[in-house]
Length: 456
Ligand code: MG
Image (cartoon, rainbow, N blue to C red):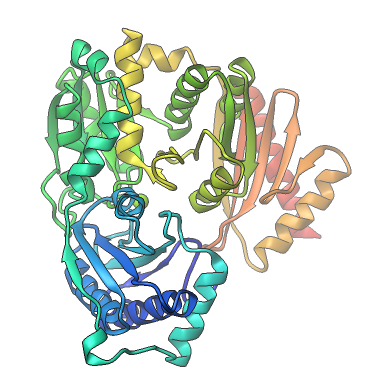
């Protein structure tokens, strides 16, 4: 991790560490990086934001910084992060900026810098931005070389491109009834309209942009969606879909009101895309369900497993020419469209799969290979990475292990992963097996190895 940037961008509390001065300087530093790399080129950067109250303040400051070093700006206003990533490719810019704190509470905001292809900025380039920022090595231009600002719409091209990637006729014939919860975030501007244009019957809630997030916490987990789950069932909808604040993730509710884990919807997409393409490379992380492995085996796919993190998965997809990628927390990556998780594209694909199947959503999910997952965590003191390394040492004596990220112990019929949190004093334990009993057994094994490691 850098001095400013975390795993993907910088985040913090507005007017404490994320201030307008900070955004101004990041704009100047990013623009200076681009100019140093390509001094003779006319440079363009796309800038967009989610619905947070502080979005406009930070956007204005950041744009001002870019213009002051002679970089031109396309301002797209409020848009999902994947739409901003798409805009980099669509407008053929030299980079992009998404002003968002994703699923964090309303007092937070953040800045994600993007490559010309829309992918999160490379670590090496981020480090140069940090150098320029801390040394204040900004390349201000003369008054008559200041950048130009253009305002353009990306919402319409984004929706239209998604529509062109699915079978709209098949959806129109079935006319699925979908309830949408946009969390008052950036997806408010895209998801209800996309679904309606795909031919769905749409009821939307929390779909007016409001950066106070009055209805619910923008993290779309089961706890925050309890009310929504009841609504989906009570309305007799075919399914429900809920997004996070910047709409890169979509999570689904079946017609019975059940919360569906992200790796199951990812599995449905993987299955459909492997069938359509007669095979391909799937990229996911080592923490994702082996449902994916099982489906890949059945449909002529290969699976590449990376460390945890959507940016890592996106980079691997680009590097290895992967077909589709994803994680367990919702939001599938379609690399030929957007090099990042895309909640709207994920939703369109799921709706297409649902419409084609003629089945109920819960029936489709029932058909997936059965695995039982258990998760727990332990609060620990001291060096988390060292503790997890000790677990690896202990486990390696007795089992087959994988240390791509944390310590994963592999069995014939399941696995357990012991992994340090990147940000909190926590070690997480994930277990998965074909029966609930076995899954419990593997979870307990992970816990006992952790205890042993803590004692030694
Ligand atoms: Mg997000």
